[in-house]
Every structure is written in structure tokens, then in C-alpha cells.
Length: 471
Picture 1 (cartoon, rainbow, N blue to C red):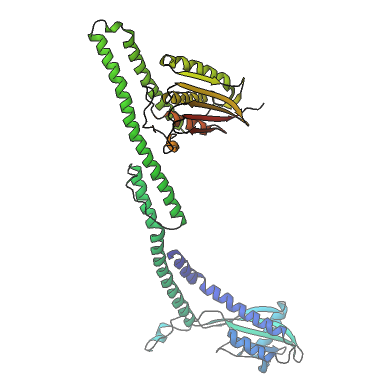
Picture 2 (picture 1 turned 90 degrees about the vertical axis):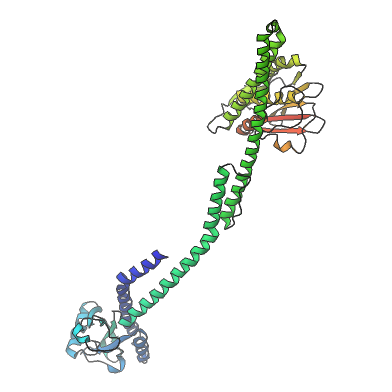
């Protein structure tokens, strides 16, 4: 508003007089042209009166001899030039106008400098300032009258703003300035309450969320559509951060427990083998140490895999490969690792199925699904891996006959760090990262699908789908 007001005053100061002059000159020329167009009417005297008094223009019509046709002339302000012209001067103007092509402009009266400081001394009241006189300009054009023949139409207009006009402008601009500044204060208050204050509150809330205090943060700001959208986005972020913090605490507790147990066993058996003669020769002691070391390795690998999957810059290495061949090798290899524990893997598959994917990542996904199924396998300790074509996709299912997944936690099993509280059938407890890795990998694959079908007491079937490669 301050800029707008400043521009208005600058326009008035530097262009006000020029604009006023242009407008008044236009009044004079249009008045003369209107009279010329209506000279054939007997009553154009009415038009002359209307133009003269409405636009404050002196009008004089002279014949070719310079004589003024008084009944068609109007004198609306004092000291105009055209009503004090001699007939000889009028003839000169007539000839100059004809030579100029039928119309021309000429300077009129200039009384702007007739006052001096000495003239004003001793007078009382509101006296006009020095240089506050008037400047006029004359517009002339020739025309033809039915009775007088060729005539010269002269219209003289005051082209300098008077003291009263300037004062009117100043009063108007001052009032407008005051109104705009008041409006600016009111608008600033409204904008502050409607936009600025809510944004400040949301900024403070975002700072609290960044400090990890998402649970206690107050996001109660309301405002315009954009502010409300920002609030909704921040609420979602606060919820995500809160859940992430919850899972982080669970991860620390789980990882701490999972690290502490194998380390304690490794240390205990190592001390046993060191301190008691003959214990170092028992194979079962070495099996315990090797098994617990494997648990530590799996835990570290899962955490590294998830960290890698979360990296935005990590790119997929997509290529065409036979997923049946890849899965056959994986099942055979993994089956040997767990067969001494009594677990059995069955693989049902087609002869061949080509997919366009990252073979290493898909192998990791299937490995995690198999490992998850083994962890939660039923008493039969059987895990079934099935591959088949489903429409235009290749589908891989991993099924166990365990207790199944409770409906209340089913939506959360793909979350990072999530781990069911129910007891495992194996001694090896998962880290809660395997299914999150599955989710991350499949979402990066074009056309990748993943999901789970589970019913309480009837086991679970985890599956993935990839578009079948077409040559």
C-alpha cells in the first residue's frame, strides 16, 4: 500500500499538470469539431451554450473579415484572448489556419507569473500563491456556414490547473492515502491471523517434530486452503515420525536382545572350552558358537540390506532371466542349510519363466519370504514354494502351515522394524526387517506386486508377482 500511495503522489507531482493540459486541450478541439459538424442547423446556438458551459470553454466564431458573430459566441471565463481579438488579428488567425490545413493551435493567455511577493503583503485571508494564475490555449478550425460563408471557429480552454483544482487533488489524494493505509493495517492484521500466525505455529510444530517430539506436538493451526493442506501434510508427517520412533525403539530393544543372546552364548561356550578340559573337543560346542555367529551375521546383513534399499540413489540392475532356474538353485541351497533342523522345502514350478527384473534383489526377496515362513512354520515344518503364470504375470508364493497372521497386525507386517509378539517355532528370532526389504524391493520394480493371504490358525501365503517377459 505504501508503494501504491507513493506512486500516486509521484504521478500527481510529475504528470498531473501534463495530464490536465492534455484533457483540457481535448475539450477545446472536440468542442470546435462538434460545432463545425452542426453549422447547417439553425439552432446550433444551443449546442454552443452546452459545450461552452459544460467544458468551461470560451467559443468565438468569426467571419472571413475577422468580425465576431456574437449570437454564436460564448464567453465563460474572464480575460480570454479570443474575445479581445481585433478584427485584423482574427483575419491573420483565419489565414494561418487555412494555410495550416484547416486547423491549428495557438497560445492563449498566461497569467501564471503576474503575482509577486510584494503584491501579497498586507492582504488578509486565503491569498493564492505566487504563480497560481492561468494558462490558456486556443484551438482554431475553419468551416462553412450557410449564411456567413467561410468562418473561423475558435475554442479557448484553460490548460493549467487552478489553485482550487490543485487543492481538490491534494485533498482527494490525502484522503485516498489515509484510506489505503488504514486498509493496509486491517489487511495486514487479517493476513497475519489467517496466514502468518498459522504458518508460524506450523513451523514451530515442524521444529518439534524434527526434535523427535511428534507425539506431544500441537498442530491446531487453521487458515486458508493452502495452510490447511500444509497442516494436513504436517499431521501425516508427525504420524509417520511417531510410528517411526515407535519402531525405532522396538528395533533397539529387539536388536539389543538379539545381539546380547548370541554374544553371551558365544562368550560362555568359549570360556567353557577354555576352562574345562575336554570341552574344546566336543563338536556340539562348536555348533553352538557357529550357529550364534550365523545369527549375528544374518542380523547385520538384514540391517545393511534395508539401509541400502532406503537409499534413493540405489538403482535396480534390470535384466532378463529365468526365474525358475534362479529359484531352483535358491531352494536347493537354502534347504540344505535347514534340513538338519527338520524343515523341508517343496518347490512347485513350471519348466521355464522369463522375467525382466533385478535377479539379485528378487533372490533376496524370495530368501526373506522363505526365511520368514520357516520362522513361523507349523508343526509339520513344511514350507511350499510355488511358481506359476497368472495372466501376464509370473507369481511366486511361499506358504507355511503355522498359526497365521492376526488381522489386527496384518496391515503392519510390511513396516520397518515391525515384529510380531507371538512365539516363533524356531530358536532363531527374526529382526523384523525381512518383509520391509521385500516391500522396498518390489515397489522399485516396474509392475511389481506383493501381498499376503493369511487366516488365523491356517498359516500364511506370501506372494510376489512380476510381469512375464515377452520376446
